[in-house]
Amino acid sequence: MDSASLYFRAFFGVPDQRTSPDEPPTNALRGFLDMIATLVTAHAPTHVVACWDDDWRPQWRVDLVPSYKTHRLVDGSDVVEESPDDLTPQVPLIREALAAIGIVRLGAPGFEADDVIGTLAERHRGVMPVDVVTGDRDLLQLVDDAHGIRVLYTGRGGVREPDVATQSYLHERYAVPTGEAYLEMSVLRGDTSDGLPGVRGIGDKTAAQLIAQYGTLAALRAAVDEGDPALRGARRANLEAASAYLDVAPTVVRVARDAPVADMDLALPRTVADPGGLDALASTYGVENPVRRLLTALDLAP
Image 1 (cartoon, helix red, strand yellow):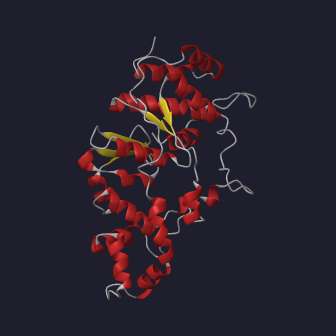
Image 2 (cartoon, rainbow, N blue to C red):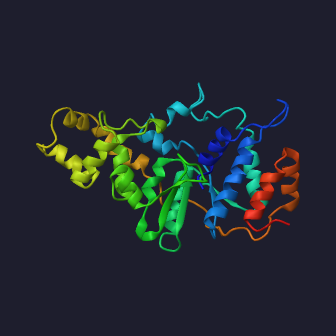
Image 3 (tube, one colour):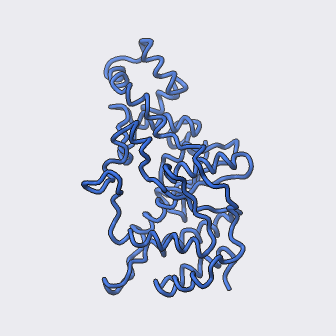
């Protein structure tokens, strides 16, 4: 699970049920717990892990593309991510709930949750099927039919009706055949939500056509350098102008497959890790119902 993607969605999608502004906000916490319950019930996983942003904007990515996620910074800061005031105090509660239930939460110093997911997908590649749950299109690069890696993309239908992204989905929706081709297409297209400019004048359709025509981004760039007559006018000029960006963007966009992620047992919890702590959190914040629903989904309800 791409945790931040899910709890941000929960925060904006689940109504605030407070009757007084003095009460602590809980909508992201409630929604996040219910999302896990929904996923476990619908997909019956044997393992689950909440992947975490230990560093949401790693310096090594910023060094390559200085605009990377700059628009998400709090004004006057170069390290602090903007977050809604009522969401910020709920994030520690989400961590606390995961720990009390016994669901593993994993991050890696200097890496984003995407990199944790990429590393775990690589680690379990061919060992067991992997479903990545996220609302972030970047992770579509991990789709790999041969090794059973899918993305449950929540961007449109949420966790109840996610797009199940396989290579067929990539072909139908983006006209690219593989996760790797999606990555290279996305480099050309860019992503304003991550501060990646892409190549001027190239969107999804044109980027996919270029990757289909030349096979790889490297081959496309070689064709530009060699003066391929099929590349002319503004398109050639824009690709040439983006040369410095294209030198570094693939490294920024590609999720790590070798981040220093702890090797832990990710199996569903067999018992509640901290029953007293979970009861205290549930009663203090009035989230007994979503806690009960999640414990029922995990077959841990008393």
